[in-house]
Image (cartoon, rainbow, N blue to C red; front, side, top):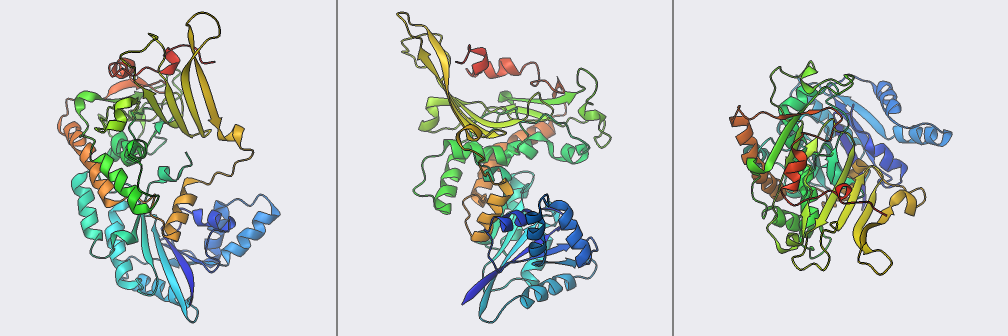
Amino acid sequence: MGSSSVIVILGASGNLAAKKLYRRGTLDENFKLIGFDLTPMNQDEFNRHMESCVDQSSPELKDDFVTFSKRCSYITLNKDAGDDSFVELNKRMESFIEANEVQNRHFYMALPPNVYVAVSEQLRRNCYSDKGNCQIIIEKPFGHDLESSLDLHRKLEPNWKESEIFRIDHYLGKEMISMTETIGTEGRGGYFDDVGIIRDVMQNRLSAPALVTDDDCLTALDLMQLLALTTMERPGSFDAEDLRQEKARVLRLVPPLDIKNTIIGQFCESVDGKNPAYKDDDSVPQGSRCATFCASVAYVKNARCDLWQGKNDANVLALDESKTEIRIQLKDTTDAMLRDTAHNQLIIRIQPDEAVRLKMNTKLPGLGLQTVTTELDLTYQRTVSNPDIPEAYESLLLDAFSGDYSDSVSEQELEATWKIFTPLLHHLEGHEEIMPAKYTYGSEGPDRLEGFVASYQYRSVESEGQVV
């Protein structure tokens, strides 16, 4: 008995990563794609929309798009017609089934989180099939605190098993985290003001390395995912459940973040006046206390992390550099033969310019005991000629379609992550006297950041001498 796949993009005016997977030859040769959205479009209009979203810079790519578009169709969602549009969607999928064929259905919800539950209920009621695998794919944010995250899970659970829910965090799809953004809110201040840097970046991305990062704009889940991947014990296998269990286990060892170990900030106008302050965005409420910067210290209470300390420069907008990296600094030993040497560091650069670098102390040749910091540098672009690095969404969607849940965030990981961040979030929201420190657009962050980081015995390599 053969099988085929149907990919339904709910909110079809959005992500077209499936097109790239098709070009790589990684999708089922019998797959079909259905766009499903409120925007009224006929097939020609949908094809033109897709055409505007993909690379057609060569004759080969143009031919490729023509072939791809023949596998695609579109249905306009009528939100006032109850289940009718979803019934039509089910009929369209059934029309693709050949004799003696099993059809796998993947529903990618490129939708606002507040409609996840309602749409998932309609999909389960009208489009679910027992003859093959069915799956919903959702993107963060998964709630805005512990209670709302658990509530979302409870409402999805009656209709969709945990093994049928793929939660996407696109940072887990990257090849290689401190994160910084050089840009501001760029007109999305209204959205950002509702979410803030801690939810938008720290809670959704920190599940990986135990670092404080002021360098990029991750969500808390992103950061916690990276924190977990960096600090967890070696899993019994690379099986998805073994990996996700180890991540959840280490996240449970992280106590809730404390306001005493946290700095929040909000960017003001750049020195040259060309870049406006956060509050200058017309969509931002005047008097907003929303943080665009956060640096916080997370303690991981396991033996592995006693040997090093992470730089958790949390999440920030409008800094002087845009990058994402994990930076692990080895602690000083109490019986070191040489004093006042630089810290050894392992740096994993996720973006841009993917790389792994090891900074260490080396004795200079000669009779003396002078040391210098040297660096072993594995940069993808230098080591591998023309590396073909897939985009994060390509990797994650391929995992979802093939049933590999290694990079899907489990409900246990979500619960553990929200337990780390919710007390801090509620404390900040409940104390209006706590105001974010100002920092200049394009700077390294609030003035007190350097002293704050140094108070935890973390020293930047840049302050410890020349690297050779």
